[in-house]
Image (cartoon, rainbow, N blue to C red; front, side, top):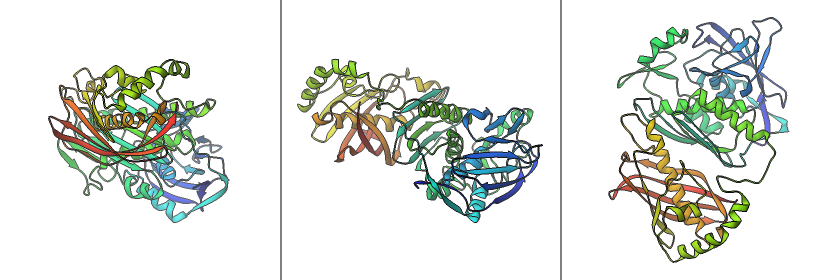
Length: 451
């Protein structure tokens, strides 16, 4: 989609607000190009409007609230997700209360009315944002990284603090995938959280008709789960809505571990910060050009050594990979044979992610095993002389499987075979083993860019 889009005609839906419990009528109206998405409170004098921008976010406790002065709109993320998922750039969301209707706790009802109204292209071109370098954030138990990509893709792992219902899912977000893969996932909470939510004046409109409740190992719902991974898919739905607050479509691959509305909105601010600064050459993780030039002779000698299939220690790995603590996940290379490489990662109890993943039950996150495969594949790609000085961007993962947990004290042995290399793009197959037993595997795709 190269052009901006809006609705063909108004789309309406009525219901109750999840947290306010208020009855509300909502109408989504077409809007002019370059106007973005705005919420209009028609129940207030002068019908004030609030732009759906991250700078207007004021609260992120269990939902996302935007405000201007004393005018607020709560729980905007599910409506925003429906608009962003379908690629709608410009719209006015009219409300006669302070919160959109919750529907069934997903974005399904909003998708229905948008499809009924129809979507129309506009003459003006869409200005999508592609990060010039990866954007990273670690906040409490949450880790998020956005890599450049030709499309928008989300890879997400979710779990509660006790490690229950840990789920993983990955999908490209486009109008077709959005509707089938994410839009039906319902909001959820744990039974022991309900009392605190009520005391905080929240979920006044909550019930099993619009939320899934988890009590111990039981799932309380009025219908079967809509997806095997419905909980993590709803987290991804929230991400789509919250990140739309940057005001432009995103072309990137987002990897998220235990996201939340607060973290999503903080990450959106980091995206806006890069979006607003002057464009410069992409420099992902690596040292400045001067330092790179000083190490040029060392790199050339190391590449020659790699051509002889020699082993690499941690210091030599850091001369090839630009990653550093806490994101360098390769401790050494055991051998390189043609288009195959074997490396290892010593998993110790001192890994920073074990503080929150999970307290009393430390497990290496699956997405970090995937990242380890990506880094090892990067070494294999960068051993070629013509690729020296490049950065290997992790672009996509397919056929990802996690078979057994990886624990402190394990030695993660990673075997990677390059399957295809065409120009700046490469695809590799990776397997992680512990004690010769496969614990995870995936196919990963890369793009090379200069430092």
